Length: 339
Length: 106
Image 1 (cartoon, rainbow over the protein chains, first blue to last red):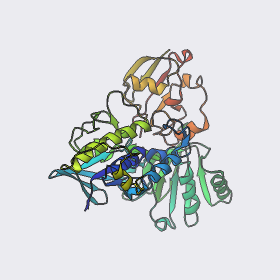
Image 2: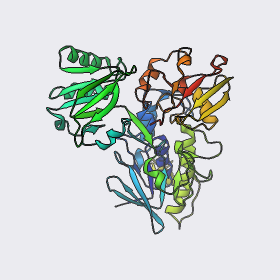
Image 3: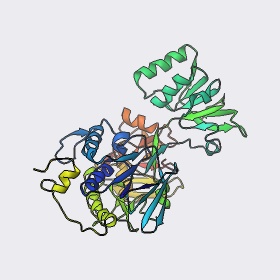
Image 4: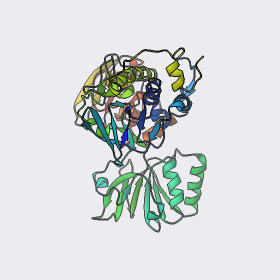
């Protein structure tokens, strides 16, 4: 069990700046994110796209922004719990008890939800039957590639994940690569390799096809694929792998008894607290009259939420507003010499 | 300004007037039309504003660029009439546009 001042859900820009604001107030935060890296949408959706509306930074990419935010919070030695999703939230005395999908438990007086548009999860096959076989015959990621040795495998998708795994698994298995159109969007090196493997008769490529049905009772026996004209082909296979990128889902947060407005959490604009005391929401996931989904709004929201978190974490201390230019306390927390 | 017909997968129709230069996605969001999520807010990064354009309108639209085609790989049940509605910019020429939304976006 980890006791902390604030648990932050999400590790995007709003969350990272909230860590900084909490740190300046002397509060310790722990951060949980379902992705394998920090940065949220900045890292996952647009690492190379320039952003032009961060105050005082005329142009920077998503990746650079996150790198700079991480540097800014270095003095606070924050723990990041990545590849982990918050599942349960329960009241424990005056504090909140948060449990992750890996059964890690946090106790904190405040929780800041900076979950963006929800957690990123693999996009799945639209077929109902695919659910039945999930994790036994249908997979969206590969943990142990040996599992697929000497098997018949159909891989769906047109990006680098689909191409990488087609190349890798074709070494020990029979691979059919299926994609909804003839062009692949992977790197040219991957596309060349896959085309060469096809020429050499090592892998089979089927385009433009999409999954139509799965046959088999306890185990997948075969699948059919269909093109836009309705032409159907049958392929014998043991496993199906789908690589369609990630989709954003609100996930367990929706079950926490918070007021929701579509996929957003309404907050008050004084402290960004939700309808539950000690639960805050900042960044893209929160909503209020006039809400702008901009990174800079997330920064402002985190700064105000941090002050309310201080009151809950230090009920016997008086909150005092201080400037970073002049406060000795802040300089100490940042590891700077007081001038 | 264009009159646009958005048809939900249940066949429920929404006919609204959308000002020029707005995207077809924004037209749906501002009129609270369900079926278009637009999680990324129009930066062509999520494929949750996917629509099927009516056959006779599909050819009249400005062609999709490579980025949109790539994103459509991730859309839910795409077909050859699939577009991302954030990339369709409204003009007088689109008056009468008809599109259908998939049964879900993710």
